[in-house]
Each structure stands twice: as structure tokens, then as C-alpha cells.
Amino acid sequence: MAKAHKKPAEPVRIDIKKEDTVKVMTGRDKGKTGRVLRVDRETGRILVEHVMMIKRHTRPNPSKQIKGGIAERESTIAASNVLVVCPGCNKAARVAHHIDPIAGGKTRRSRVCRKCGQTLDKK
Image (cartoon, rainbow, N blue to C red):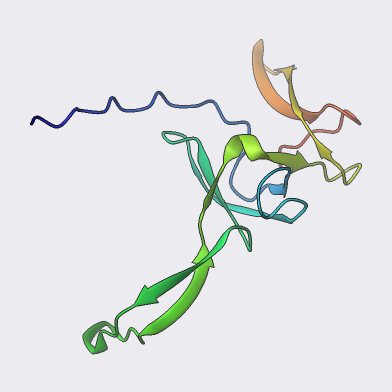
């Protein structure tokens, strides 16, 4: 019997960037906050520090100085399950986009907190 080929998922637009602080809104780690370590736009998942911890069984490999045993590490979480924490109001908020004019008649899009209006992008 032929194996059905799965179409690759369409890339998801994610308003979360690496080094953002996010709060988990749903799932087993609901209420935790952490720093974003990695964003995968193809699968729509993000890796958050100290969230969705799993146990990984590793085999020792002396040539690579890897000690065997059970190691704990983070697993990915769906980007739809988190909200960005605003540095201004210190609350989890959705992200809005503002278009700011810059020199030379050009424009720049910046991420803005929907609650307090403070920009989320570091300059």
C-alpha cells in the first residue's frame, strides 16, 4: 500500500520574535512566563525557556564528551498559546502594528502593545 504524502504546512505569520518575554495562556504550563529561545515559522511553534519541559534519555558518547542519563530540556509550544508580555505595563497583551515614517520618505513597521501603546521592538 502506498504511503500518502503529507503536504508541507503553509508558513504561519508569527508576531513573536526571539528574546521576547511571553506568557503561556493555555496548556499544562498555563501562567508561566519565559524568554523565547527559537521561533519556527514553518511549523508555527516556538521554544520558550523553562516551559514544556520534557525528559530526554541520552546514551553516553565518550568521543563527544556526552555524559549519558536522563536530561531535562524544553520542547516547542504552539505560538497561538502564548501572548507577548509588554515591558511597559508588564501585562500579557496582543500585538498591534504601527507604521512610522522615517527619513527619506520611507516607513517602518513596529510592534506595539494594544493595552498601553508602548513599542515592543528594541531599537
